Length: 178
Image 1 (tube, rainbow, N blue to C red):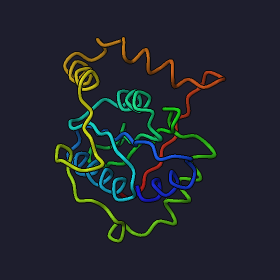
Image 2 (image 1 turned 60 degrees about the horizontal axis):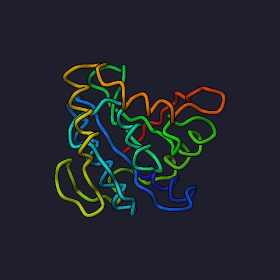
Image 3 (image 1 turned 45 degrees about the vertical axis):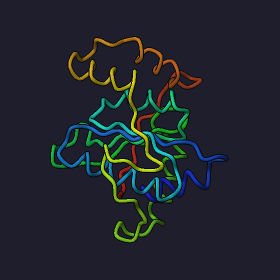
Image 4 (image 1 turned 30 degrees about the vertical axis):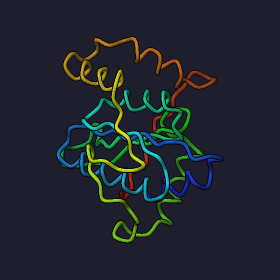
């Protein structure tokens, strides 16, 4: 996360929020808390989901909040004991070359996790730069969890914003230390 924060600080003209979401895996909530803590210690405002959220909803939230990036703490289709995260660029699509390589290089330059400044924090706790996502987005998340696939309005809006000029969306991820 420190490497991603450094990359964003070097490559963005202004500080905009980062959106953070997480899945229901055992360690995801703590990893999301570490992610938020590193971003806020680096000076980034963060909008976060206080409960597990579907991956597409996090990208949608990034568009809604004009975020500079979004992170979804998830192991996706990997074994249940694993965890990592997906990174979405300011266009709300998953990162693609050359951005993925530049972020990976920034991660390689970052210090080890024990030396990374962070605000100790867990989703749901008050934090100066971190604000929970609520309202329509939280309601959408609840509906999607209880009735998968039955909330097309918000997803349709998100999809129209993420497709690039050629109609393709990148599918790469960077996994790094919090």
